[in-house]
Picture 1 (tube, one colour):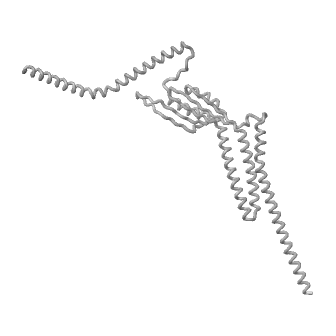
Picture 2: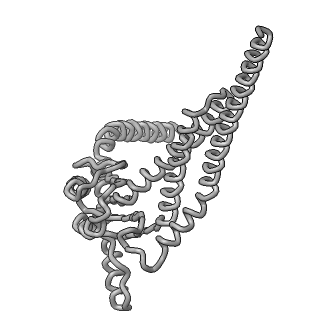
Picture 3: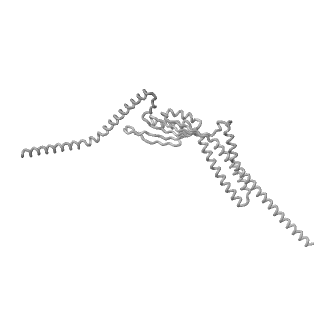
Length: 308
């Protein structure tokens, strides 16, 4: 009787062990299956990135797309002549502030010193950021600074690239959430390391694309204007069309050139006066001794002639 009881207990223990192992194996298989399914879903999201971007681009580039949804970058390069350089640079700073913009970069070369015969015209390179809504109004207002000699406006439509990047970013964030869920469920060290490597890669891409979108948003919301400001003594005249106008402006130009040369000659003479004053005594002394030497030689020649 006791022996049969021992056999029965042993049989129950063996059955319990097999049942435990079977359930453990089943739970492990279920976990592995869930991990594989999640990874498959993530990779499917990667493959769908291009299709999402394409659909988004098609939707954006359709004729029914609203103008307000376009992502456009505006830039302008403008050259201005000014007769009053100091006043123009000051007015430019005030205009930028009044339009809600800011000066991104500024560089001034050359110098102008009062009461100095040598004049070096100054030149300013100014990079300005202006809200896109006031872009055209600001350019129009620049005419008050001086004579605009060159104006070039460039417009770049980045709508497709913008929405493609935005769609890619959304997909990566979904991948990141799924990977975090997998990391919580993972129990194997090998699986954890693999998921962490994938999380690092996805996180880097998210950071890069986020920075790109921020940069584009800044360029879209604030237009860039590169302004070259030239200091001039007078505005350059436009080329005349008729023969009469050409003859008239040619004569005026010749007279101005002659006047300019006379001014240069006067400046040269006046600036040479200190040197003449310094050199003149030496010239007089040299002439005096030269004259006496000639007289002595002449007298000596006369004496020798009488002796003969």
